[in-house]
Image 1 (tube, rainbow, N blue to C red):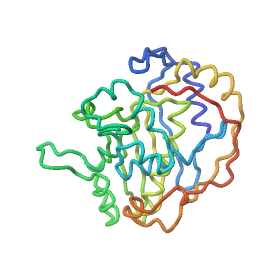
Image 2: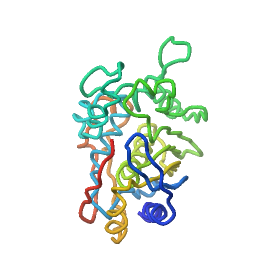
Image 3: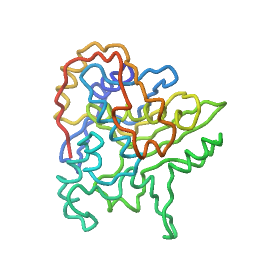
Length: 284
């Protein structure tokens, strides 16, 4: 929370206004932020200065792991986070690659689990490669689970924000470096912090390694103009509570488990104290 609130305060005090063409709104923006989450010591980075809907964030992560490309599949997991981008984005609704209602196109996990080969001969399951190597104790520095494919941007409803995850195995400890090109700090970043932490915790569990730290790099961190007053005058005035604990079902032992039977019932948060929720505007 100290890292998160420090970033929020930095944006409020030092940010520069940027016009955002996609949303038609201004953003108060800073460049470069680095957050660290201590998975080894169970310090779950859940925002406490307002109520956070952590279950939906984990449901979204599960959808990315499974390579989902349809908002209905995400809803079945427990999150409506893709409804607006799949169905209310005018440019995407007019896109010839859109297959119909709830279709997201080639985005996020759909790219990472089916990364197109350059020669057009098929796809690569980037996550399966990483899991298989880590289970054998192999640290392949060239393997990155990425959703970023510039040649496919026109085939999806949204370019990926948190776009790359690089796992490193060092002396039996698994680490994660995640890179995010753009972060809506009041709304999206809250979920992204949860997802980086949980992704490392899950990967450590299914590959049989001790978890270390997750390092989260954000390139463009911003607060939209219609979010600023709520952040400055409400959330930043609140005193954070201590970090809660994330409990993951120990029976989750493989990538196949994550792809098939795992649900939100397999995740619990203990000792979560929080201030009242804040209804920040969402920009499509």
